[in-house]
Length: 400
Image (tube, rainbow, N blue to C red; front, side, top):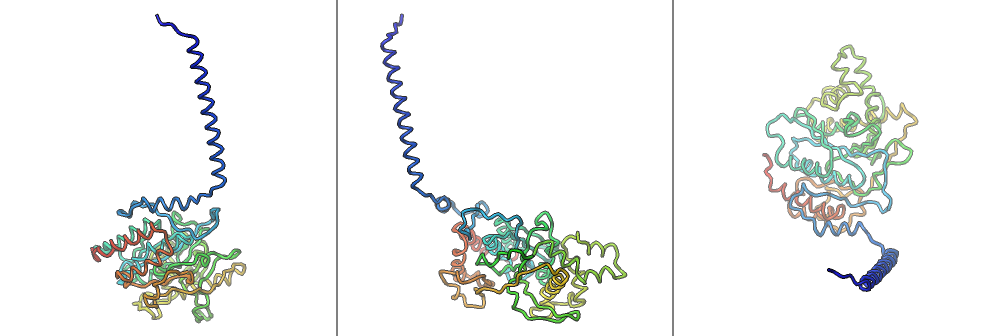
């Protein structure tokens, strides 16, 4: 038989109560200490996150990385845009200059840095065998990885270069699945990188802006004088880009023509899809046989995009007197016209944009210098990604 001593049970109960009291006292003291430390300590969580990312993230497989971009604002509150902004540029898949397509993921990331998403259009004859080389596919893969939208537009190879320039005017016909009517589009080039974020912010109370608006003089066409605006950067809403074409004199002439059949009506519809045929019907109306002629850099055909865009925008502004566009100059440019040694610097604060060096940038010595610009713009993770991209590009066959 087991005998329970009542005194022993009482002592155990007393000890247990004292332990509970001590535990509660310690918890309360810890709470006070934590509160004091919290109030006297400021933790930069962005710094902690960057440290951890750079300490433990490796870069052997670039397509498994989560990319974060260096912020260009010191505001503690996130900037919320009701409408999205898109940079739009295009490349010919037949170009002998590899830099145009090589730069696409880097240029897309530079636009991301200043608050823009990117749409990249590849134009050419996709039906040709092996036309998408291993290098081109590599560029497209990295382009997707940095979050850009890719659109392919089919055309004969002889039209690819001119279409890569002209197609930017037709951003109003981009698919709604990517961009909405109230979203904004800025025309861009694959070898032109934005550096200073404030230069690409829209002016309040306006319908858009023209970058470097005073660069190019004027021209006469259709009995009217037009200022020539550069295609480099024109910023308008998607619906404005489309309205410029839908309300154009070129479309009115086409609609009045006696041979406007159903297929032509479909191409002239405001609901038409972006295509070679849609673009060509307007260009042939304005430029006749020049559009179908062989184009050489610097000849009359080379400026068709700037001429047509200047005409459309000027005519639209004349019709809509309450529609205002901010006309801007251009800041200092880091230009490919300068020797590569000019790019060999620690700071790039004085430059608004960079006109990138073409294929010689792929050479190891030049790429190391170019890294200084990358390190100025992007965080370590993204710089490592682009260095890996360059390494893969250089060991990848040019053709297959």
